[in-house]
Image (cartoon, rainbow, N blue to C red):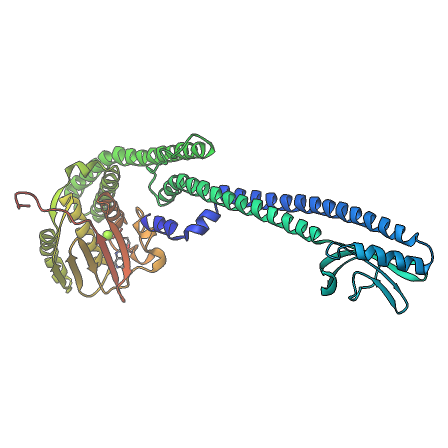
Length: 455
Ligand SMILES: Nc1ncnc2c1ncn2[C@@H]1O[C@H](COP(=O)(O)OP(=O)(O)O)[C@@H](O)[C@H]1O
Ligand SMILES: [Mg+2]
């Protein structure tokens, strides 16, 4: 559960933000806005550019027409000469080329073509820059008029600047807004994520409770999730109640049956089956008892009885209790205490945990059994066959036993009980490979010794 939450937090923050609905919407909108802006500006610029060119072209055409109307080639040459003298090359150039003859206020090279834009330079006539040129045939020569066209370039630059200066801030602001909204949304959905992680981790009491912020679709989803979890919790607890009820109702008649069998066995000792039947009935009673006890522990009721428990003293007691049994079967039970802590808990239940784990090590394991208490962590290790990785989780379920253990005494409730008690104490239960053997670790939370200093 905590691990899952840690994973949620570990994802890079920018990726988490990029993966939110508001951020994606913002980015898409910004893209659409950019495309529309570019298209709009492009179209406007294209229209303005065309308008300008047409206006210039008309001016140039008129100029050429009036010069060409001067008469024959010599008359045109004179007219161009006169007009060019009165015209500032910085704004307009005029030129007449006929064979080797070239007259006008621009002497530099001219590119081919009718209407074109070209970069011209002629220091003598103050010609420098971009010109829009129009050239027409006139009496065996070429008559050219050109107008300075930096306005055209200025127009282009102005459009580009407007585009950049309106678009960049807009995109930046949109992205910023998106990040802010995404962070808010992430904060809001974190409540739902967390509840989901806890629910899937098995904590059916987890609820979203409240999604921060004003009521909207997220709030509705949170409320829906809570209703679903409540329904799930209710049906699971109903199921548990039913099994507890069955165990409870059958316990008494089976207990009576066990007593009757005992009496019958005493009266007819020659019938060996009666004794076996009595042992079976006692096993069933023990199973029902354990089932009810686990249900009770899972109900959480004994938590009110929590008190400081000295783990070291508890382990010592249990080790003493099981030492004879271990020795009887030629095994050794070694106890190691390292800075054994006090924990807040139920002494009887914690003792049951130790008893179940030691019993398992003696019954299912082999070699010496090592019981260690280090701080608030208890470890019980043996050198038997262990439990394969795939079975370490199911083995915590009620009544689950490995196939090889079917013939050994027991009911498959020992580890389920351990799990329930550890959960009740909000500790962690881990099953590891002891290479060979099983190593069970129970991590509890360090508590304080009682104020009086006595257990
Ligand atoms: N120390 C151990 N070494 C090997 N297998 C074990 C050990 N402890 C438990 N197991 C396996 O886990 C199963 C479940 O254990 P448990 O819940 O205590 O039930 P029980 O001991 O009544 O069979 C056992 O039946 C056994 O197969
Ligand atoms: Mg057991």
